[in-house]
Image (cartoon, rainbow, N blue to C red; front, side, top):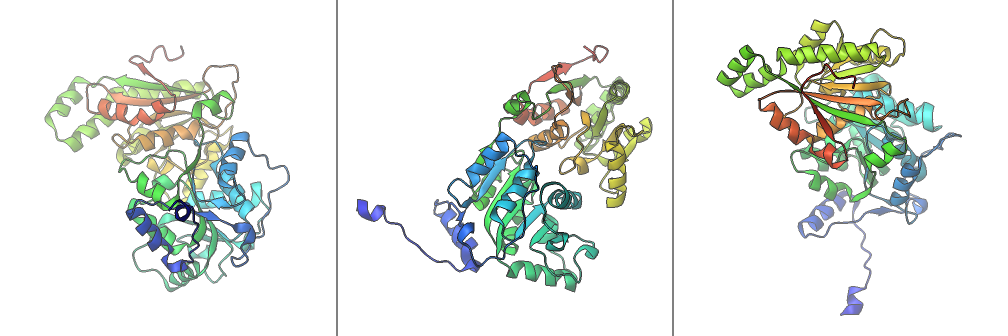
Length: 442
């Protein structure tokens, strides 16, 4: 009996059935560990890619990759790194190590553009002719052969409505190919009910999930782990900050008293109107004005966030600052972001809806002011903090970045704010409560 237990069985599975086998194993409480022997794979098309000379991998990035490639094979699973810690370079390094045709799946078209630029111009020598960016605008892929490096978005892969003939033809080509590795960027944000569909379309030997926050409010993160694999590596946020790899962030919760008129209306109205009232609280607007003027005078770049479209537009109009929302086209967004990134630009403050939560690189931003968020979403709180985590100047100061969340006092928003902060508290951050902003300099 002991000899039988130590036996190793080798079973070949039809590639079209491997997800069905994996599902069945999960039902039997037998999760699969997937490893890809890429060095001996003669069947999967190769990708001509090498790291550029001078590419530097930080110690924690190297450690995360060693967990993935520990035994000469590529192990499927998650790598968890804070925003600003270089997840993109880890994903690109994994692709360059495997050297087989690869797919990168992102959340937005802006992220697709950034990944392409990082592959081509920053970290590797991959040729543009080997890259296919599958986006809604067909100029990037129509009437062109499918490249060995595919970069696209989750919605483009999981689209339910009827596609154009050219789009459907490309999807069929993607399905027909055996891919070496699929990199799932910001995988915690992908559609929960589409997890299996993505991997049915892009059939890859190795699956690498990249995320800053392995947490979801719908509790389907366990399903995602079962689909992709175990957590291979997770970095400690405070350790990276202490080593200078991340900014040292001061987290402040600002309590804004409701004005008597707004509090009276708050007590008399329904839930939807209550939320509008705590967001548009005049004292909250005054706090935003104070903080924006104060930090602009210090020469800082500021992002003001709100999940709610009408309030963020109203706030930006009131203060005469630029605003970026999901209603803007890609070109307009890029123009606004370019001005914000330019050091001497007159765009020092940018008001943003949830379109800016992830996959936007704003290394110069050092102050975030959060007007409102998605109720108690821990994930969103961490994503927004991540916009200012890139290393900042000021090595001798205690804090070189600042995260403000504005809360209307004596409203349900205080409960949601506490719930949102739980993930960041677990990462070692402490929220300082401020009731008066006159002493903000101290």
